[in-house]
Length: 344
Image (cartoon, rainbow, N blue to C red; front, side, top):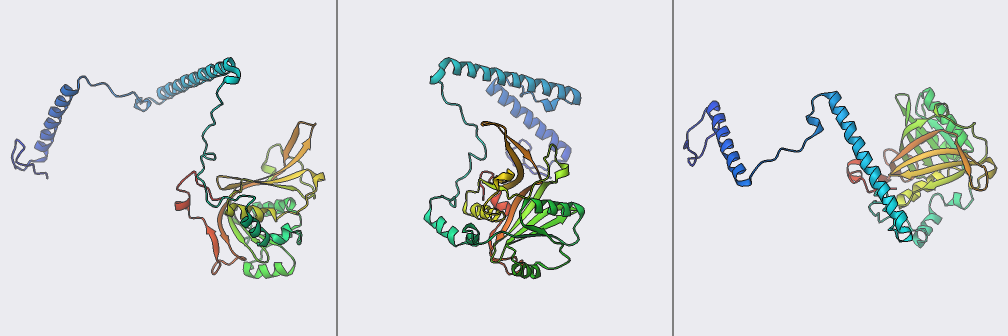
């Protein structure tokens, strides 16, 4: 129920819903006439394809509109190309397209390779023994309890990629009991592959004996049989390792964590390369074999498996879910609010 002020033509009377609708419609019509008389002729609104109710007609109109835009774009491109050819050396430089990568928000923790503090930290961190060639990597790969066939095959294929890697079944043992046994047997890494609904979905990578421990989300797993035009199975040669775009202090630590999985001296005879490519905080893993066709051309062949990692947390020391000290934890709603800010 609505009451109107005494300034209205009806004074302070209470209106029924029917009279109220009539009164509001009349006021709206009077206001519209006043506006049209003051502003002049009213133009119709812009046409939108969503107003077309027929689905087939709307689709045809959309395709025609898209084709016209493509033609205009091609004509503009040809015009610019002719202008550049006519100007020759005096032509202005091409515009660099804006991407999320080149519009990245600057991070204060970005690593400078010539920084003395970074060099000191690298010489005294947990991976210094590996990079000083004092230890050789030895990896134990296991799974969650009662793994399914796809997870087991994924672990077996990882063991063919990482030299001196051994696959053991979990047998219901807690990680706190497994870690001392790994240290006693000379293992430098413990890798645990978790699964959900018969699909690998997580990885715990623990550097032994002093840590750190990283927890990753695993996605887009493709085994060798699922890949098209894959090469033959990899040989026993130690592969080369490529680490791309690990630029911050956190990314530098994660890059060294991956690098210490493989022997320090690769065997170039095998022509195998393991790549960890970081893009927008997603780490893409690929495993290739290359061949030199001539002095200028190189052919590559993917061997598999392939998967994608997303860092969830980094913990100091070995795995301890209750009392462990975390260096970094992903807070999705805070850290992923800005698409142009990356952590690695």
